[in-house]
Structure formats: structure tokens, C-alpha cells
Length: 309
Image (cartoon, rainbow, N blue to C red):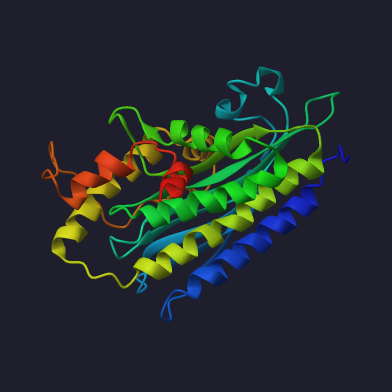
């Protein structure tokens, strides 16, 4: 059992993950590619932002790698870790959001991250976090089942019940309290993960990171050519507003990035290029738009749905 965190191994994995995901997503496009923007952070560290825009499949998307560091922990990271206040720290991760053109293709988000702090006269303290979630505009049961089945397979080698725990954590985290509704159909979310076995913990992060594209790519291929018109596009832009609201009000990564002096362009890359808000909009009963909130955005157990089919 390995106890010492291997920072270089984590960084090498994350950079490789970014490249692999970008390659798989580019293969879904018709010529559009990810631009590469390497950047430095004056306070320490830097990263590589990979952004795609105006593609046949993706209206906007980004796959970002960052490795940043500082001499004093940001307030957002010490709220429930007061013993680490004032400790030097490093944080690295890959974070991505893909916003499709076609309203029948869901938006997806994924993130895997590693954090390490070194208090004075004490051993380093590390933890992993991450996960992924799916935000459809028009729901398909088979897509939701595939997404969650892939998520469960990524967790199963690391402990019984881990998928259930991370699934419920995701449902709770990606919840818009002011709207009283989930952001999407969930997936996985975990944070502060440290069992004391670095290799095991790192393995879990890799399994989650590697499985994201296997969960998302088949859904995109199934839905990218689905016919749509102005009605579906209008509803997509309206529902994107929920995505913006969550990221600006609740998202820990956004808060940490801004508090730690992160690169604003990369932090806010997750926001969609076009969005709309309507006053007190209610979908017409019996429509697919109404079914999104009545059936799909209910925190349901999609593996039970699979068993019932």
C-alpha cells in the first residue's frame, strides 16, 4: 500500500486524459478542432485550455487542464479544514463542459481533480475529487441508463455501494435550491476522497476520468442528427439558463478558481455561448418539454429503470 502522493504521476495522467478526450470529441465533428491555449498564473502554476466552437456538433466546449499553487489556502478550501489554514498548497485537474448545437444532444460536464496541502511540521494532506453529470433538454431513457451504467462500472472495482453513494452525492450537489429541481439526470460526484491508500485513491480518479468519454460519446452519436426546429432550439436556450445559474451560484470549482486568483477565461469557459431567461415560463402539459421536469429531472434510479425494461 502506497502512502506517499505522487504528484508527477497525477499530472502526467491528467495531461494525457485531456488529450484523449479531445481526440475522441474531435472525431465526432466534421473538421472542427480544439484550439490550444497554454497559460501561466502569476501567483504560481498554469494550465492548458482546449476550446472548440462553432462545430457541426458542438456549439461550444472546453477541456481544461490546470495546475496551480499558492502559499496560503483559499477560504473555500479551509471552511471545513481549518487546520490547513495558512498551508502551502497545489491543485490540479481536468474540467470540461460540452454544449451541443442539437437540443436532442445533452450538455455534459466532467471533472477530476487532486489537491495537496503541506502544513508546517506535518505530513502532506491530499484528497481527490471528481465526477460527471448529464444535462438533457429532451430526455431519452436509454441514454440515461447507459450513462449511469457506465458510471457504475467505473466505481465497482473500488468498493461495494460506491456508485450508489456517489450517485446520490451528485443528485444532492447538482441541485438548484432556488428552483427546487435537479440540474440534470446526475451521474457521479465525490470530493475529499482519501482512504490512506494513495494508489487506490488515484486509481479511482483514473477510472472515473477514463469512463466519461465512454459514457458520453455513444449518446452524441445517437442524437447528433436528430431533426429539430425553432421550438426545440428555443427550449434549449431557456434550459441552459439553469446551467448558468448553478455554475455562478453554487459551483465549488467556480468559487475556488475565483478566490484563488485563477484564470477567469478558463473558469467561465463552462458557460454556454447563447442562453435566454423567460419570466415564469411553464411548459405546455403533455409535451416533451414538460416531460423533462416531470419524468427525467426527478433524481430517479436509472439502473432500476434499466431493470424494469
